[in-house]
Length: 464
Image (cartoon, rainbow, N blue to C red):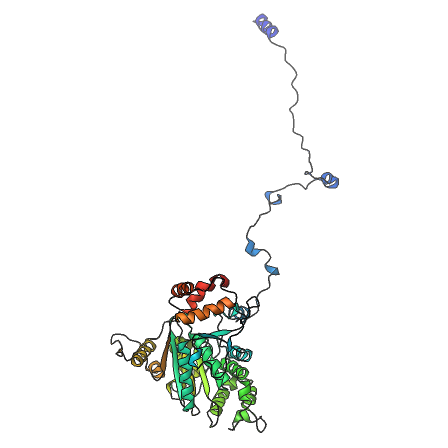
């Protein structure tokens, strides 16, 4: 047995000595760098995941970059930019040979279907009164011009006839959207300024009812009336700027608390200049109106644009948190008092309102009814009756408009359209030959003579 074991031991391969187990060698290496000092310094030891450097998160949101370098618009700057009015363009050609607006030009039937130029002095007065609208195309031409339409001659003739008889012409301008109602109001004010009348204009009734200006109740009034002090003060300043020459000729005749600091023989311009605080604005307006109603004073034209917004509930609230009707705001209520005849004007004058078809506000049903009845009566048609199943009629709105004359403005005639396009061509805005065929084409594409639509068709590329 021992011999067998020794034989097996001889047959087996001799055992080799085992090498010790290889142990890994950890060598700290610096990160790749082109700087020898950084490569030799080495990186700090990593003890946890928090010590690992996180990749930088890239953002592609451009709205958050550079906000600190953007200058924010000042208070009221965006509104001023939105409502700015540009009345001239140096790139337009100056049109020569056109008639200039004088005292009796708009009342002359021979001036129908012609374009007249507004004098610079009248333009400055109209700008001060807020007559021009930002949506109108005055900025495409060298100087403001207006087209004298047949309706313009009729309107101005009615105004002169009423003033000559010491009466009041109460006119409501209505019509389709962009049919020239605000421009007709500008023509009425231009005629009044050239005849040395005093013009009081409320540029936009919407500004009085949307709740953007301060207001305060008038004590001891039923229903409760509300004044708008800041707006009334600005209105008085605009009246002074637009009628300074006429107001400086009129002397103060009545004594009141507002005239205490005025010297003897002060003018109405001094009376308005003496009103510096909003709290005295409404008493100052009443004092000015009372002075203008004295015997021997010139006629007064009072205008309002945006009639639709002046017959609805405003955004103001009374102490019971009920909505305040627009007629309970003192300025609008005073205007409708003159339009209805409740406020007397012994020296004669004109009260004219332009309806608005461009606003999103819905027309009051009483306003629609009374205008339809007046138009039907003027044309000799059957007078429409109120809908017995419709609720919402307002007697105040109906009574405020029932004594007025409705003047509807729609499309211009082809002769008037040709005169207007000739003026556009002389200004360098129409390059085509003004043939009868071209005028008829633009007249048809422009809603059968709608001035705003014709401007869109002919001058659309220039407005972009």
